[in-house]
Length: 293
Length: 263
Image 1: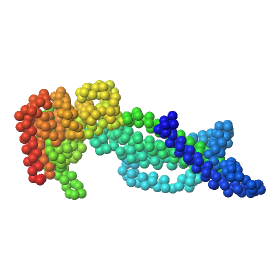
Image 2: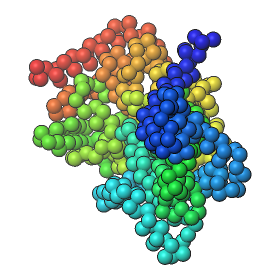
Image 3: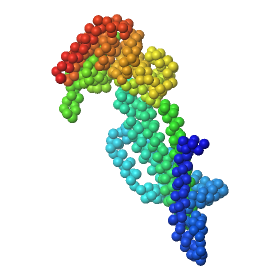
Image 4: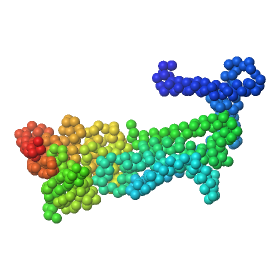
C-alpha cells in the first residue's frame, strides 16, 4: 500500500507538503520569537521553558507569520462557521471577488480574441496596435486601478463593472498574444490546400485558422483567468466598500490581523486554482472532441 | 489562345524566375508542353529541375514570369476559381482536428455542397480509396499510406477533371508505394481523369504514365518527352517486360544527359 502510494503522484506530493509544513512552523518560531519574548517580559515572566516559548510563537493573536494551523482555524471559522451572508464570511467575499473575476475574464477574453483577429488580418494594425498592447502591460496595474475606478465613477459606472474592467485589463493580454500565435500557426501546406479550393478569407479563417488556434487559446485562457483574479483583488484594494478578498486583505493589514490576511490569501489562491483547473477541464474536453490522442 | 480543344493543359514558352538575395533563380526556362484529356503525365527529374514549380504554376500557386499557360482555355487563376483541379501534396496535409470523413468533406463544405450530397460523396470517396469504415477515425489513427489515400479521396471529392499530384508517395516505403501505384492506376482508369504527377522515381513514372516529361535543372527545362503506351489495365508485372525496361532506360539516359554538365 505504501509502495502504491509512492509510485503514484500522491506520495511525493504529500512528502513535499509535509516538508513545507515543517519549514513553515520553524520559520514561525524564528519570526515570532522576539515578539513572544517581549510578551513574556511584559508579563514579568522570566522562567519560561523552551516549550512554552515555542508554543507561544505558534499561538499569538497577531503573529508576524501565522502557522498553517492558525490559518486553518481562521478559514474554518470564516468559511464554514460564519453565515455566507455575513460580511465576516470568506464565502461572501469570495463570491464578490469571483463574480468580478468571471465578468472580467469574459470581457478580457473577448477583447483579446477580437484584437488578435484584427492584428492577424490587418497588416497596418500589426505594426501600429501591437506595441500599444505590449506597452499597456508595462504600466503597473496598482497605479492604474484607482484611476480607472475614479474615471468610471465620473460616468456613474460603479459596482461590479469597474473591477471587471481592471480584471479584463490584465486578462486580455495573454489571450491576444496566444491567439495571434495560434491564428498564424497553420503551415504553408495547410494554407496552400485552402488556396487550391479557392476558399475565401472567411472560410480559411473559420475552417483552418480558428481550429489551429484552439490549443494556443486554452493555454492563454489559463493564464488569463488567474490574471483576472489578481486584477480583481487589486481593484478591491481601491474599491474596498463592496467587499471581496482585496477588501479583506486591506482590512486585515489596517488592523494588523495577519491571520485574517493569510486566510484571505489562501482562499484567493484556492479560488484561482479552481478556476485554472476548470479551464483545464474545458481544454481537455475540447481537445478530445478535436481528435487529440 | 492557340489551345486545341482536346488539350486540357497548354503550356507555351513558360518561364519563372525567382528573385532571391543571391540573384535570380531560373526555376523554369522556356517550357512548352501540351497535356491531352485523359493523359497521365509524369514530370520526372532531379531536385531543383522545376517539376514541382511547374505543377504549382498549373495550380496557380506560383505566378510565371513569362510565356503562356492555359487550362481548358482559361488562365490558371480562372481555373482555380472554377475549382478545375484537385491537388495532392507531398504530405497528406489532413487537418488533425477533423475525422477522415470530415477531411474529405472539407472541399465540399467550402464549395457549398448540401449535407446529404456531402455524406454521399464522402461515402463514395472512402470506397474509391478502400477506406470504408475509417470515416470517424482521426488522421493520427491511420498509417501514412492510408492518410495519403484519404488525401487523394479529398482531392477527388468534388470531381475535378484534373488531378495534380506532387510526389504523393515520396514519403512511403516501397511496398506501400507499389500497392498505391496500382490503386492509383485503377482509379485513373475508372474515373478517366487527367493526371499530372510529379515524381523522382523512374519505375513509378514508367509504370503509371502515358507520357513522361524528363526535366533537367539549372535552369529548369524540359529535356525529353517520352510517350509510353502500355495498356491502361497494366499490372505491376509489366515492370519485368523488355518494353518496360526499354522505356525506363530511355528515361534514365535522359536524366543522365540532363545532369551531365553539372558535374
